[in-house]
Structures are given as structure tokens and as C-alpha cells.
Image (cartoon, rainbow, N blue to C red; front, top):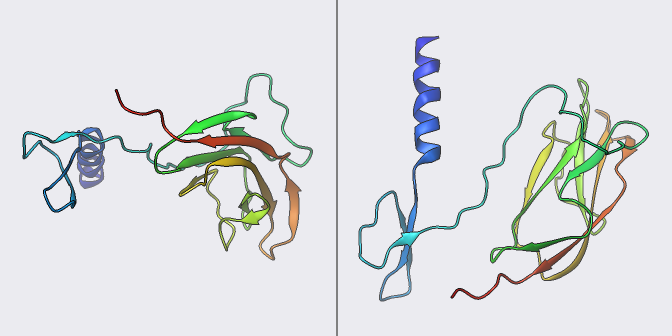
Length: 161
């Protein structure tokens, strides 16, 4: 138990450490936990994907889909500005034993097997309009419920000043 507490403290400390990024004369990008060269700058990193067991907190003003799944983030009509095209999709659902979630981007499944996770990081989203959805499925892959689709817009990041 004492080792688990120590590991937890260590991971928390590492997760809060700042990361620096720079490109060398050959165009190679480097990352480090301290600025090793004068041109190193803090790196803009995406939020870590997390999973929390149990029921999600109720959403204020949100109505979950009939059988218990809805998109909780991002909100409908959100404009995403991320240079790497990254986005975390979150659902309000509590998969029972043997159930999981399949995430959809523009109608195509983004995970090949159902996951108990209520969040999934999507990468390399192309510029334009996209539709997100998710389905709660049983162990056999039979769809039990599907979240109402959410439309989002991906646009390039604003130019740095």
C-alpha cells in the first residue's frame, strides 16, 4: 500500500512537470523537462486522456439519450483549433459489465473493440465539419443505444504573434 502511495505521488509530480520543445539546425524537434538550449519554449501539449470508474456526474441541463449514452464534450457547434488536430470526445454513460463504447467520427468507428472508457482522444482531425457520435454495445457487439450526433468544426490554429 505504501508503494502505491509513493507511485501515485511520483506520477502526479511527473504529470505536472513542464515540457520544453525546440527544433535544432537540422529540423529535428526535441523535447525535454528543462530548457537545454536558449530557443527552447514550453511545449503546447494536449490534455491527458483519463478514465474514471463509476457514474459520471450529472450534466447541468443535459438530457441523456434514451438508453443511457450522450456526448458530454465537446459541445455541439464547437470550433476546435488545434495544430495537431487533436480532440477528446467524452460521453455520459456507465457501461455495465460486458458493455463498452464505440466512438464514431463522421460515421466511421474510431476504436475496433468496445472500450469501457468514457473518453477517447482523436488525432489528426482534418480541417472542416465533422460529426461525432458514440454507441453503447454489449459483449457481442450488439448496439444497445446511440448518442445523438454532435457537429463540430475544425479550423487551423491562429498564427502565433
